[in-house]
Length: 395
Image (tube, rainbow, N blue to C red):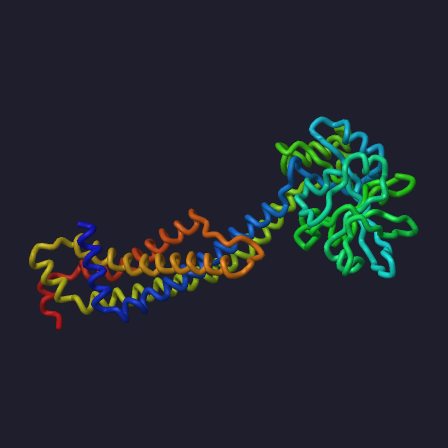
């Protein structure tokens, strides 16, 4: 029976092509906007998860905090590093001590941002090595004068020569270039280090007295993520004293991701609201078409009722027609969006992956069915309530 209703619905759409196209155009535009916004939201979420994903460990950043009650400022030094290194579940601790200086290679010079790192920093943050190699443990522990350059620094200091094996003078100390890394905007975000031009073994950038550090990078068991990783680090630094936890500002990489996703979701929610309004307008268009259709087919309704059609049969027929109009627009919109996104991804380099999330897109199609049903309720009820005699007399 339902297939019969559906067949009649498509025959009616085919008999009035212009009206049908105009009525489903509003649904088409609304669903298209919703699907594209959902695809962008999904793509940004996937991009954030991938960008902040580390390899082999979860990362927690520790900054000195301030306790307004005791008026004390947290201290990050060798003692705090020792405490963290002895805590079960923490793999390693690396102070962050970026610095700036003018560097030189031959007759060329540049102002560079430097960062001291250990041997696992590059693989941990999945930095791409363009040429050469990264530090080995011996070079870091023995404070060897070696360095990694960013691609931008290579262009400034070695525009025409091979950088690997060459040296860079840093305040009178020659550093051998052993590798080139792709330090782009994504690497700056992923590492939370900003723009860095040169990477050195960690001890070259630490304060000489090792008295205090501006930030500690703590690597914990990768199974401990988010709040659990933060609780482990905070508890170790506070020695179990809740009041001392205020002396340290501790945030995990996962919390950064969640914060960024939360901001993205708020922005997308606003855009989805706007797209929802256009979908509502499309539903009004479907309702208008169905009212016109009922008016035009009043005699048809009378004949069907005279031949024994029940009230529910008339009601279902017009509800199915309204839903078919609405769903047709939705399906066309999803198909067009999928084709457009695939074509765009193939032709252009998107800053984030574009993918249609299956469940939200399926929910959009269910929504189009609901819109069709709601839009068809009044016209269908009006048609079903007509008496055969009244409908047959209609001119």
